[in-house]
Length: 275
Image 1 (cartoon, rainbow, N blue to C red):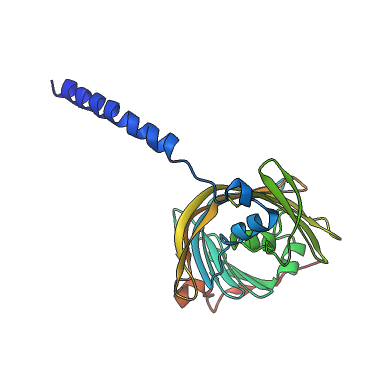
Image 2: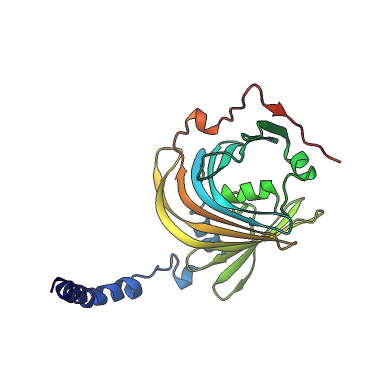
């Protein structure tokens, strides 16, 4: 009798909820940020710029997947950043932090392996030349994407063309040619392609699963932004990376211990060996 009564109550609840669910799903879709008559190249770029965030600090938890011919990595990473160029990150594991910890400042990079009680110190360039980074997607590019760095400004980007609801903008400097595709209805950066002029680096980047929330700014005000929860990157060699943000906190104080790398006095230092 109790089971029958529960089933009856559930059926009634579902029938009563269905019209409301239909309204929630079909009646409350995201509205365009710009009306059709206002979707000019300049307005779309300005609208997209409003979702770019200026921050002094960032603390985030992210799910990171790296896939290449030589190596794979998949795990949850805790990441901290402090303006202008200090970052600290490490992977979370079920058994504690026992894989590695990384701290960078300017062009200096330090990696500590607790299990081996060894640490390595050198520049980003030496790190990659020594073969410690086994992916075609360079570490500094990955960091730029986590931090949302880009040149999507009126001063740097120029309008190139439009296709359906996508506007294409281009940026060029001495080292890179970058293309940005913006959804003109929602002012969302949905895709970008980065080509290195003299080197071999090439990246195709897609921005997905946008979320809206309020953030506090450095001047103590706050604003609502719409930013992607997922960023997917592919290189020329078909190596790939997927960043999925689980938590993000902007412009909040970061305790010093969260961004300092403590290395025991008896740890063995091994410098990057480059050929």
